[in-house]
Length: 495
Ligand code: BG6
Image 1 (tube, rainbow, N blue to C red):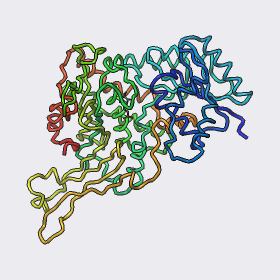
Image 2 (image 1 turned 90 degrees about the vertical axis):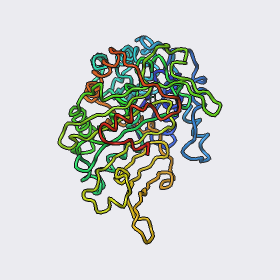
Image 3 (image 1 turned 180 degrees about the horizontal axis):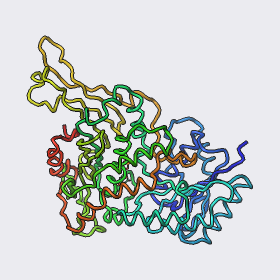
Image 4 (image 1 turned 135 degrees about the vertical axis):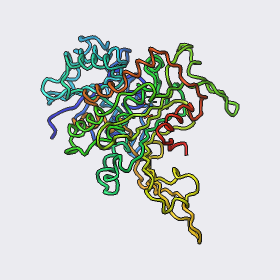
């Protein structure tokens, strides 16, 4: 019999992220029997709500997505019965002390383990951490806090936040989420590289010509799947801080790191931070920024970024950015890592594209026709949608002549596996409950990530650099093509 309990308190329980991601992820974990025997979930927010109202609110976004087993409704009821609500201010020690009392009642004298998920705006992070840790930490088990970005908006503000949190929590109690690290194909990156002899020896400047990290969304800042993206947040942060400095940079670090001593969280993060510290801070000429403008297509008119009433008309906030980064170490010297991230583009996609060098010599060059670039191998890891890994190879077109052609060796997850891929939040929440830190950002990683981007972010703002405008639904600013061309490469996603 398990003598301990785990309580998970979602602070900011009525927010979109909580409703659309956190509670459904917790339910999926429960459904899969991944949560401990004794667990309780508390929603904490300012508005007044009864337990029944919370349950009703949550139940609207829970789905039995894993399969349609008959007992889903029953499981849902059981899960909802474990969910409770406590109304309180985020900066009130008293309110957190009341929560503590309720948590104790649920724990019934067992060892208490407490996880707080802070799904609240950054300006109240520290106050909430202070109150939760002073008034509601566990007396005899662990207390952990999950925090979501933004972790500051530059090196200074991020360091200030780290220091503020340090007053109340040890580093190993803080779980900084970057939900891209919880995505299946990102998790698979190390498996692909380190467990396949045909890849690992090629993973360096010797064979790789460029690495591209591409994120695009086919909707603007109006948000995804009904998850509201606060424009107050976005306009103050922009796409570089929203996507590049965290999601894409984290993928880059995982991609480029040396072999870790083990799969232990500290060993992996030690290697990632070395990559980040070996990188050159971005210069202004390494960056292209863009902002989307309204566009009418097929009779439908799509609004521009500044058409939103809450965005200042003269906002220069980038909704698109492309950047070239370099890792100055022996493995990657001279290899451009190109990043591209944008909203309101023509497609929704996140992928890693590894472009290999030309085959030396010219045995078959003339058989490719004019464009040798078309003949290099490319490994693509499509993070979403339609998760896949494919490798472009050259082969002979069948027939009497000698014409070469490119084909894909394709591992399409949907065709290979029948099980649905878990949402990133499921993996991350489970890891936090189990104390697995591998997929969370350590404070030194965070500081190194900011060190790379802070100077250029400041320069863009100080010089009021005007973004290149691009129509909603297009492929983004043409400047991104030139940026790649300067490094003698092409974006793989543009064909
Ligand atoms: C978030 C960003 O971190 O990631 C959003 O703040 C973005 O702007 C979102 O839309 C994308 O996440 P996903 O999992 O839908 O690709």
